[in-house]
Image 1: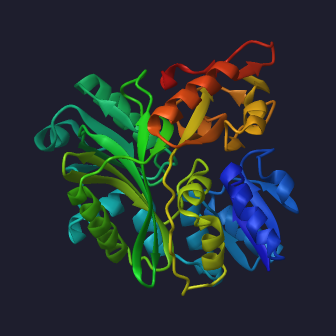
Image 2: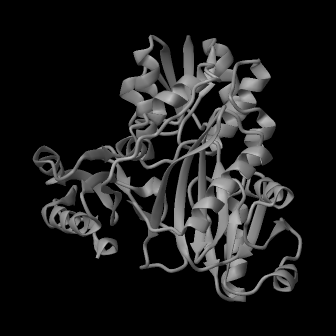
Length: 409
């Protein structure tokens, strides 16, 4: 088959390699001139994967047999819609894809099916919102564009001035011009990676999601850790909630990603998606469970609807560390490969190519690289991380250090 992959980041490289290993011809669409996945495909087309008309025309012109993506939300919607128009196979209908990639539709489904989530309201462009919000929510709360990738536009607001700026920015980032405001709740943020097969929902990995504290109003993830301590009540609620989500969104034989807040024995769902987690999560899952979820996913997009998942967990601690940098041109990585060779780093993932301009460190799209480490205990894991951080660096075009390390201490 000739397959069009939407988005050419590091996670999509694994998707492309798996497709090609099965003899398929793969072409790529990505808005960047030189995305990381470009060298792994027969042909790359520089175009926005969010432009459905453009992707439709490309698919028709190239006579593709399948359109797919992995580990990203908004391109998932494009793939489903264009596939439906061309009557190509897709594991998600356009309706399901819209419901699970747009936060407003998602929250409505949560409410309808009893999925626990914080109170929220929908804001409409060019309509007064201040009174509506104040009548429903209390500061602090979150403002979110309904259909932006990553955490773009997600802001915690504490007063009227911050609110107006946050809402205006969220509308600018939302393609559907839909914004939600929701109560902010304290607690431990977790990420739940699962697979819905014919036997039910299989929880593969529950990991903590640690975010930078240098800017309390932003939500930049720098680390995922496993295992985490959860009560039996919370474990039951995770399973029950995952089942409700699959019923609400009519998910069958799909990956499932859930982000949630846990406080005591209570759980509140932030959002979910019918995809694998980004940030090389597929490799994190494989490391802990022995499940090659990328292989499962490719089986699914190629039409396998009957596969069942049987994870086998290992007794160890592990974490994915995401590295950001200050502004500059990425020139050189120091010490990372040496730590891979020595065994301190189990897996290394370079998300930015050399020569890339780094402007900020606010969303997952700004990550320079990620590294996976393992140990027998959490204490050993912490010592290993600090040892690695003492030995590594990122240099800009002038030879100056630009690696941002503060979040790890």
